Amino acid sequence: MADLDGIKVEKNYHLDEEFAATGNFHVKGAANLDWGMKKRLTNIFNPKSGNTVMFAFDHGYFMGSVSGLERLDLLIPRLIDHVDVLMATRGALRSSVKPGFRKGVALRVSSGSSMLNDDLSHEVIAVDIEDAIRMDVDCLAVQVFIGAKGQLESIDNLSRVINAGMRYSIPTLGVVAVGKEMERTDQYFKLATRILAELGVSIVKTYYCDKFEEVVAACPVPIVVAGGKKLPEKEALEMAYQSIQGGARGLDMGRNIFQSYHPAEMADAIGKIVHEKFTAKEAWEYYSGAVHS
Image (cartoon, rainbow, N blue to C red; front, side, top):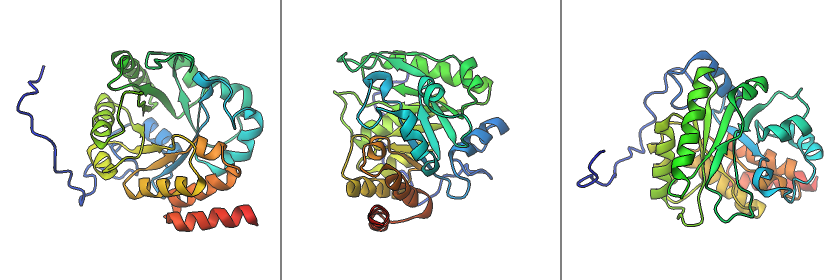
């Protein structure tokens, strides 16, 4: 094991320099991957903007019926044309989403205790690779608990999913889970996102924080920012803008879309920031105009 004594604190992230190993592909860190991987990543990240709007509605796998997600069969048809990627469980997809849509799919393959348990960090792999192939998904999403009691288990889960995905050219999305005892600092996110990237994920989903541009610079694969708890629409758009300005390659705004009074318009406003370089002010004006038209 490396001796931790004497290791210098990181300080130079070369924020004025672009990622060097881009090659001729639009997804960060993926230039050396095979055709199948690139095809699936292209289904996730728009080739023109290089970015993505994900819509997560996988909350039910540990929270049950969530406000705004009571009727997936009614909600998803209203939103499907307003986002780029659906992030969901296989049960939700098979039961409530018609298979004819042409959007990316991030399949939640890890699962664990319900919200009735104080410690959610002990998860298992709930979906085998054969079923993911049958569903023709574009990436495999695994929750990882860095610094929590279930850290080793979740890293083992992640590694096994990455290995299985590599055999069939399916990328893995590593989801940074922040436990109750973890602080949402740049130091924590630099640690967690880098660990996931070094283990082999093609995408990291995490949270926005101070010094976010340093977190992005230190992570050699694209970061998609999670929306987290429901914010007022104007604040959510500001956070989306700051994330993209800081180098995020996408937003995954679950509750900030499905718990909005106007979810489709909110998804469109986020898309304007992600794909068309709208400022937060411009996106808010777009949203306000859309809901009052």
